[in-house]
Amino acid sequence: MSADGDIIHFDNVGLRYGTDREVLSDLTFTLHAGRFYFLTGASGAGKTSLLKLLYLAQRPSRGAVRMFGTDAITLPRHRLPAMRRRIGVVFQDFRLVQDLSAFDNVALPLRLAGHHERDLAGPVRDILDWVGLADRMDARPATLSGGEQQRVAIARAVIARPAMLVADEPTGNVDPDMAAKLMRLFEMLNRQGTTVVVATHDLDLLRKVPESLIMRLDRGRLADPTGALRYPPRAPA
Ligand SMILES: Nc1ncnc2c1ncn2[C@@H]1O[C@H](COP(=O)(O)OP(=O)(O)OP(=O)(O)O)[C@@H](O)[C@H]1O
Image 1 (spheres, rainbow, N blue to C red):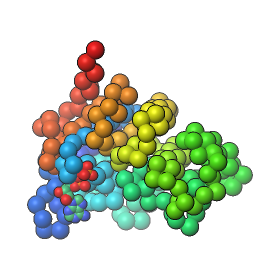
Image 2: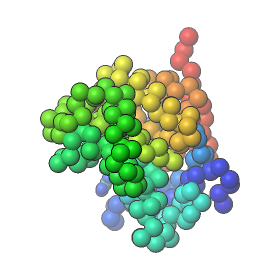
Image 3: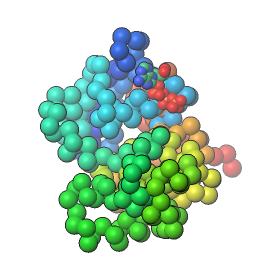
Image 4: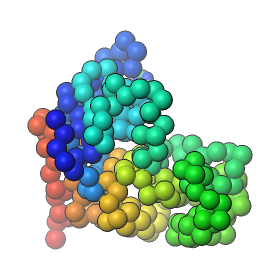
């Protein structure tokens, strides 16, 4: 059962790749609309796998998933693209379209959503300016540094103001100042109503968003077996 305001509900979800052991087990939790979540856990704990379930790139092997009030498991294939368009994703490996400029990569979600060309340029320039790439708009991904590509990927994920933003180690390639700035961008989006889920190893990042909630994975299970979320511990004074 999903209450009003919940956008995601997992009930006893498990995931295995092929015939291997489960990499995610017994996941039961609710993500509430408009909240800011961090997903933490050691390397291999299953963070990327859980994000894949959240952005509908992977179906669970067992359990129930409701998203935006719809059963995501039985969703007909033709309805998946519309559901996915409500979710902005920052992939760990960026996945920029290599043949397109930074500008056109960022414009892509707006074009897919049917926005008119004359309405694109302003927002795309603004967001690229915010992430410090005003002078690299015409560059192809291959000519950008890892950190610059990561910022294009973030701009592309947030440009269409998705209902949910899912980001996998989104600050892994940038310096601490840029990481703090990108977190502010996510917070701004969050204040406008987007539910944010950020997977990270970087515990300093957690302290940058004081009102965030933490989900911690430990070898494929939520560290709190009830799936309840807790506020992050404050940094020692
Ligand atoms: N496509 C796949 N096929 C088989 N096993 C996989 C696949 N993807 C991930 N795994 C396994 O699932 C487990 C969880 O991996 P996952 O990438 O979700 O962890 P993670 O917490 O995101 O790790 P990291 O922080 O290192 O990115 C690991 O044991 C990994 O080897």
